[in-house]
Image (cartoon, rainbow, N blue to C red; front, top):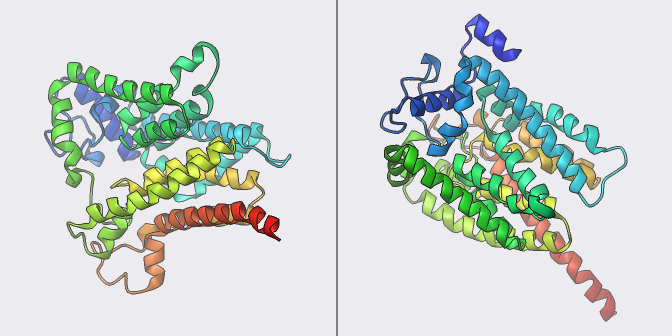
Length: 380
């Protein structure tokens, strides 16, 4: 209904959905996706470069059947269903939860509540596909991977599709390896590679250009030093006004974060807790990716549900409040010089990054302390 109203009123709604739709229309007409700064098939209110992997244009083909505003409304509805489904899966797979937090309504409640947080509200406002990709990964890792019968042969496929749409989900191939799902990891990697081969047949020029030039061209993505980019690399670029060494240093920090994340993933896996293990990998991907826009952080929704399931109400409330913040209200030096002069603006402008790192450190320290306590008691 929202999309229909936007269309009939002539309102420019869902800019990213319009880019998706423009990419699909461009592919269908046999025109290049990456040769220009924008696509002729895009409406005037969304003249932006197509930055997604070539297979994304195939995934978006159904959108060309309706006007861009209607496609935006449909994608919003699908995104809310996807968030509710992820919430339902999480509440079914957590090791413990209070009786009042039933999966049947808990996922729907989370989807509605978290629309007030920035990652989900911006996803809906722009018509982004982040929630759908999160659903692909969650369904694959929590349900399909390790299932019995013929279904087990589908494990990893949805992860491969998600990674072929946006490259960041490739981290879940490593996640599957860490938790001992080697066959699923192989299928995920094989699906990703197979889709690249398919695109090489369908659109050879676009596929070659993407993997040789576009994937390395951050200028097409946007100003990555702005507070919209909540990644370690974005934080460093904001601190030094976009110095060239920022991203290499960010990768070094990311390697340290990855070491801690591996410890957590293995710890949760051995304890039979697949949901926290999955969330660790998801948040690591957000931190180490060169670009993690605010709307990429939709993984905050299942995190809140896990905290509630573990009766960590205060932590859940704090998490909701953090992701209700708008880091863009404290822009970095690249936008308005001088606004980093206080600690408050620094914390606000990097809130998601700092929260995720601090949360991970707390989990590591608390886990180490718990493993030491029994030894101390025995010594006494």
